[in-house]
Image (cartoon, rainbow, N blue to C red; front, side, top):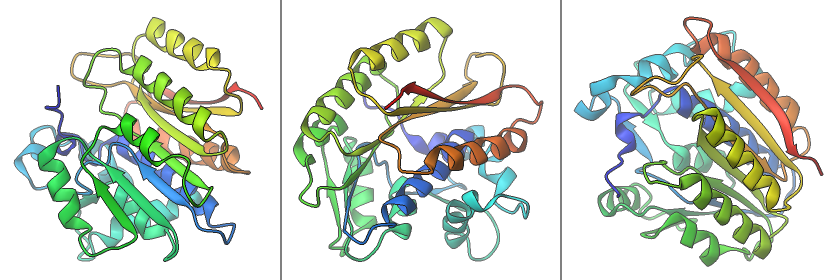
Length: 280
């Protein structure tokens, strides 16, 4: 059940997509002086060694961050994310990839707070070691969906919740929908960013219907695909639902995916989509 290890996929195009969007969500919270909580429900290990045999097995980063991190024509909306990657590789050679905890923490302020949940015991230990001594970061060994119930609503009354499940279990779309609905009932004003893979059309339609059935409004859908069809062992694309997106995020997300699609799709296949799944 818990055999998934992100190191096999670190730095792939799905990471580029979701982490570029995450960086912009963190920055949006800084437009107001009040502190906020960043809750990462499936945090992983925080930093990935791309020379590790697991990362080298499929070398997914070749089709992802390796294509964009040295580009000089990236739009301003990509700059914060790319700067976080470059900070992990000061020698100029791509060797390490920062996960969502490091990217978000690099952009947060000293009075903001982060809670990282990771269920895999080995990964949790590595994540805890990475943030040891940082009093602004709390690392918990627990299920990500349980973390939604445990840490919401936050004492700050402002929160960015990033749900990046591995989708290595059956019925994860249902679990994701239930998690969002329960969290939203407890804390309706939070910003929720939910990553998901693009599966077969019937599964995606069912997922969209289930989100609509929750009654939650103001949900933006952002998707990027780099292949036209799903093949065994290869994901054609991914998406992110953002409930209560900050002002201006829609146009920023559009700029990001419009640039990323040709940069990441070597064949020109796939495309991008931005739509209001549930308008305000």
